[in-house]
Length: 331
Image 1: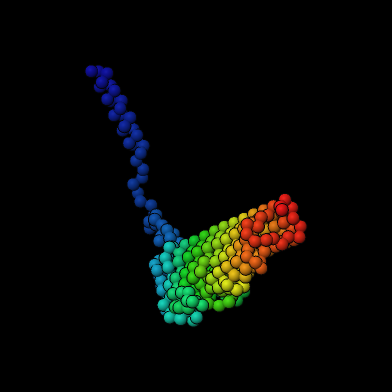
Image 2: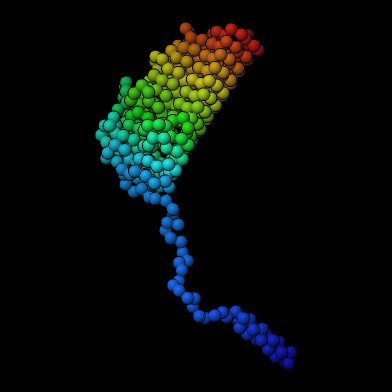
């Protein structure tokens, strides 16, 4: 019993001592209380866009807060460097009845730099007829005026139903994981145009270029009338098709690697200075036309050739005949 009393006294003394030390000054600090919570601008340091037309004149980050529709020509105009525009999964549409005067969904000013556009949809009302494209909405999806922009990146965007261009950003830009569909109306239509194009599709493109650029990889381009499916300095793992009955081509490149090109008319399946591990098909033209062709297959009806090359190594004519000056490792 005596031991229990001593232990109780010791514990009580310890608790009282710690309680005494834990107490601080009860005098409030001098001056007004300072804010301890973040402001809304600190939590979401971006500017919302809830209606169009809208012009961006200040560098920063902007985002669509809802689906938007414009009744005038251009929906969003970027007129400043250093802008990030997140479409946030929403759609930019147009109520303009004639796409020839429909303007552009996202228009970049002259010679801009440091622009990022991502994650959303652009929709017009242009459709394909028997011989041409026409309808309502936008002339262009993403385009620029004046000097081409520098350091522009567009990603995860779909564009459909435009009259002239889908995504065309000049020679110092990157377009990645984008889909362009049903764009046409002139002889120089561009589905996707950029220096670097990765993992993209441009299909149901009228006359012109489904995809055109410097380095194009893992992409597919299809032209309905006259034109070229993919036009590149280097094409890697690409598919290019033209359905034209007259001149057109599947893939035109300085270097084509692991590509498939098809022409339903009298043009070329693949036209390249160097083609390697490629397959070319042409109904009335040359399946593959190259200076050097290595481990390629060609298909063509007369008067075209399955493979027409100066130098060929390990190539096969699956259908038709070859026209090769210097053959190696092949009949």
